[in-house]
Length: 283
Image 1 (cartoon, helix red, strand yellow):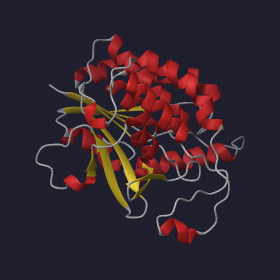
Image 2 (cartoon, rainbow, N blue to C red; image 1 turned 90 degrees about the horizontal axis):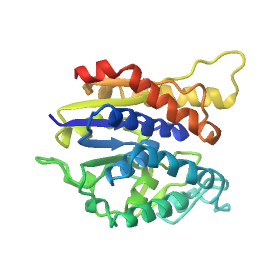
Image 3 (cartoon, rainbow, N blue to C red; image 1 turned 120 degrees about the vertical axis):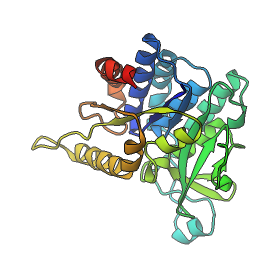
Image 4 (cartoon, one colour; image 1 turned 45 degrees about the vertical axis):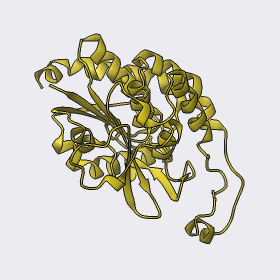
């Protein structure tokens, strides 16, 4: 039986996915196919390249501060430039170039340049072309009997793919690739269960994040994160129905870019998996 796992987006909370993978490995559960959206793609791509879950956690800790705090571009005005495919970015938004460079270097260590060079396991990473209002999927293997091959892209660097899928609106600029302008894959497919199934997975575990409760002590970031989680889970309702088990992780009001809770989020993912281990083994 081929077991797949689909990792949702969720900002810095995505490190919890490494905790999930570590708990599965510690208990002899082998993943054959992996997919991830946005921050889920950051973990999924490293795992597919052969990096261990604990080392992925270490890498997150190493690069998180750089990704969050630098690489903003100055103002470039004119929405018309965007529609005419000229390079444009709003002041204060991050370019995502740090993510791209870091992942290209990590891929190079494994002798990998493009997604199609990954051979350990099938990998799927959703993104959205904001100009075409269409989902594209970066992958190292186009699924058999695919009716829409043009929506799959294999000839792209690992860094560019994860940068595109992680270009969260209002935080990161759109990612340019050929004629495309890509934004966060969570806009249309926050938990890529169906794409993981297309790659041959017979059972799929979906991993998402619990929408934190809002109370009188909640701040604007708490409300924003709850809104993001509600939207992401609503978008992914069909994916969740298609999965064989949904592992929902509570991360105690961790903000989108709250790098101070990296350690806790890793443990949240590990502990949630251990607590649901018997149910996971049943499938």
